[in-house]
Each structure stands twice: as structure tokens, then as C-alpha cells.
Length: 237
Image (cartoon, rainbow, N blue to C red):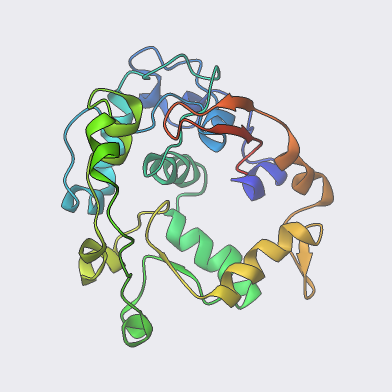
């Protein structure tokens, strides 16, 4: 998204509906692209019950978000968009470029940098993919205290993901940009080093210096409505 904005193909302060007309439904005509980057759009999760298998259906996931009303007034607070952010930003990028976010990342970022990171992992990587080790479960008292109608529960438990969900080929092949990128530590370091080094790494320039500075444009600063801790967001960071 930062790259598209830096190229002048996308305005971070423009309404999302400029690029994704259907998104204007349900009083979302004033939601701007920057609200996706800062987790402030009010679309932290899906209103309709979602299964893990639904996540593999890009059109269904994005269409539901386009039709949904925000859970709070966009731009007034952050609420961690745990899974939805990837679909929201990915759909805007698709509308602008005609490419899925996985294809764009592969051709415009990972390929030029030589970064072994994938959004939608190809079969030739299967033998190198390690299975996720699940963390310990949350304490029972914490689960009991969680409001099932609150933003946290609606965001993090719909769908309720567990480690085995990521073991299958359907998960690997899908593009779930906020959750199923596959890579190694070196690949993550390479991609993030572009920003750390002013937009250029090893002779490959992906962002101008001004494009890099956009991440420091503060969008929200206060208690996050999903994670319930103080967070300060810029453009995507």
C-alpha cells in the first residue's frame, strides 16, 4: 500500500470507495485508506459467523466486509484488525493494480529483493514449511471474563483459529495476508530493511525517502478496542 501511494497510484487519505465502489455501503463512504493501515476503520472482524474454510474464499471475505457496518466510528480509535486488515488492504491493492496481493508482493517486493517470503505458498515450498507450534491456552479465568459480545471476542474468536488449521495445503495456498505469510527470519529482515534503509536495499529501491516517512504520520494513539492496551499507530506500523 505504501508503495502504491508513493507511486501516486493510491491516495492514503482518499475514501476507500474511490477504488472499491461497493465498500461505500452501510455508512462507510467516509472511511479512508489510512483507516485500514491504522486499524481504525471499525471493521476489526466479521459480523457474520466465519469458518476457517471461509478464509480461503477471497470474494466472500471481502464482500462481507464491504456490506458490513463499522463497529465504531472510523478514525476515532484503533481496534486490532487481526485478520480483516489483510483482506481490506489486499482488495484495495487488487482494485488499483489488477493483481492479488500475493502476486503483487511476489513480483514487486520479494522477487526484486530475493526474499524467500510468500503470501500464497507455492507447492515447491511445501517440503520446507514447518508446522506452527501452538502457544499455551489462555487461562480459564481470562476466557470466562471475556465479554462474548465485545470487540475482542468478536475479532479473535470468529473464526477461532488453532495451530492445526495452518497445517493443510488449503491454508498454505490461500492468500490470507494478515495471517498466512510463509517465510523465514532472513526474508522478514530483508523486506523490513527496505524501510529501515530509506526505501532502498542492495540497489533495489521500492520506496522514496518521503514514502518511508509516511509511516510516522500518527493515526491513532490510545487504548486499542480489541487488545485493550495503549497503542499508537502510524501508516501501517
